[in-house]
Amino acid sequence: MTASVIVRVAADQRVRYLAAGGAGALLYYVLFSVGWLAVGRSVPYLVIAVVVSTICAVGTYPIYRLLVFRAGGPVLRGFLRFYVLCLGSLMWTLFGLSLLVEVVGLHVLLAQAIVVITGPVVNYQAGRLWAFRPSAARQG
Image (cartoon, rainbow, N blue to C red; front, top):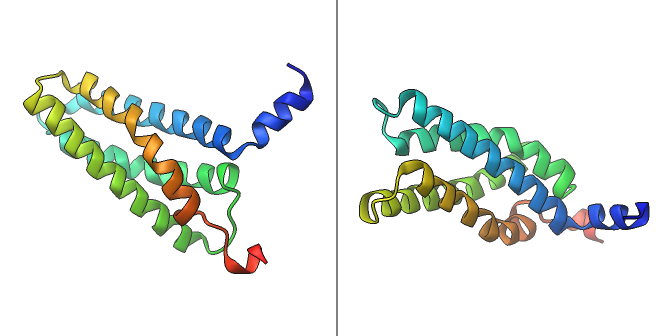
């Protein structure tokens, strides 16, 4: 690959989102797995999912804000919007985990892997159009 191709690919917001989403999903899955293996006998997997989701939301917000969407504006307002998206993802996680573990009978870590893979697809548009949308002042 030539340098110009790499620069063009890195300039694509969708590619940056995919990279950040993949890193965030990997972080989430690793933290969830460690939590499940460490305390899964005494702490319900849904509680572990809530704790890990919160940690990942705080940890990945700067990446999405600065590197993916290159958003400006108030940090707190942006984080609160981002966290609403994270809560939507958490609801998807809790529903998907419960369904796959309790109804389908999958192992918790396999079910979590399936849920983690499907979440970012939905979140890209919501992040781009709402949580990190350009402010009116920056648009025009």
